[in-house]
Image (cartoon, rainbow, N blue to C red):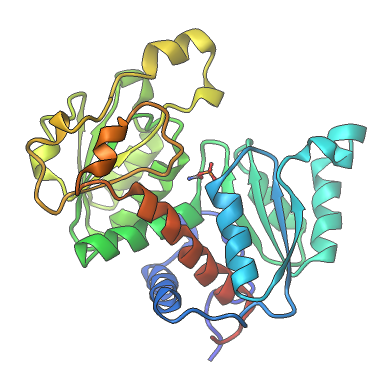
Length: 307
Ligand code: CP
């Protein structure tokens, strides 16, 4: 039977059913347990990053190479004909997708992956578009929550920091609403979760509450999802004012549940002090390593009828 993600674009979590998510997670757990080297044999994948990245780009490339595929692309568009000669984004996408079996794209503009998908004859995977969505990050986040808590249903989670521009929290909140999560939103007022996401959570019957104090939610949560203030989306004065609002230290964790885990999409700047890394709560580096399995699963399902 053809898997339902075969040849599909992966652009936004809102397009995923719970069954699709479960299929990706099941595949990712299987690939972590029993590595494969053949699932992308004879596949050539374009990995095009118009915005900086360490984890997403390199874990996609790791996933492709571990599964026997090959990669073309760029980590920075500055030296392409788009960057040097003024070629349009759409023409660039048309050309690259005529060479490849799939395209992974990160862009600083919301909607860029969708535009690429509109003209692409091959599947397009959104690796982060502006402050909009980051669906492959959501898959590795869900994978990590399930790995650490043994379940996704009815998780209590606090999202902390820049909830306005943090695309990872937008995607993850939407995905967790399929699992009846209890969501605590902790941020300065100026970095609050966008209203359209709150409206969506309300429509889906999800219980959430808005806080400015991290300490008051600490004893209640299974997952603490820290985020960085997105420097690239502020002017310098505003950034300096906001960047140190929430700094996690071992002392802040005094009332945490025993199996509470801290996740962070990374990079961190100063919002988690390095001494937290040595506590049993820190899980963000293992979370980043799980990115390879989540991305192996996405690529395998998009490019194989059956696996
Ligand atoms: N989590 C994440 O998207 O990290 P990078 O920006 O390094 O890819």
